[in-house]
Image 1 (cartoon, rainbow, N blue to C red):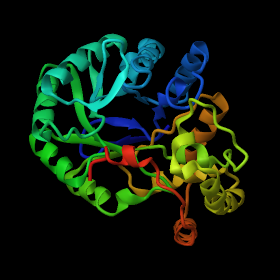
Image 2: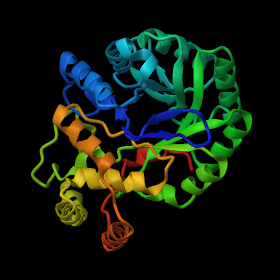
Image 3: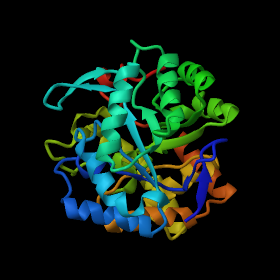
Length: 330
């Protein structure tokens, strides 16, 4: 497995990580616990050393799963988790952000226990909290780094202004935000800023929440608990129109003796050497498929062809409902 450094930091991760959210959050019925542990441990055996979770996934149980699965390999892997939301007395997410310094410290202590570890390798603020100055957030994480409980500071879905303000207090190792063949907004301002500051980029949903694999069509029926059923980009009409992008990717994939998923991941890896996507999967065969993208080389001609295909394809539908879009920092 190829390795990459996240920006100018000394944090070296596998070129592809594993997003663990889908094992028991957002995508329908939870994966059988033993199967989930097996997928995570197989990923380690295949060279993956970068695993992504968050307190809100579950909530809480995803961190417990990751902690159990990675306990035998703790010193070989990089574990990333996130803080930033409020929960009621029963552990149910209230929907509000909370990045008060005292709350960050409480979350870190709880996450360390669930992850069965004495340090968090990469701690992200899950969403920018408009009620808390980003300097206070960065300062709280800086103290945790000094205490040895956190190694690196990250942001998620943060805008350029807050990235710069946070970085001035505590160097930001990585930004995690959505980026893929069908969501390229980061290219306008985010990627140039990250390159200037020496910050790594960790794209989530690099396969368009499964759509870019070609496995989702207009005939796909989502489970009631699958949050894609609420996304504008996954309405029936949007899926029909967005299929044109998958068809173009599939044409290239056939010529490269690859799958659409591998093409989509290889395209991301070709954008910058400090980009490390975290595709999520609950299935071993999909894990193997995704990892095959690391060995796939896209030529300059391939990339130009893909750019032309993307320019000719209009994507239908927002990536989130209006309420969720309002939570995204600009």
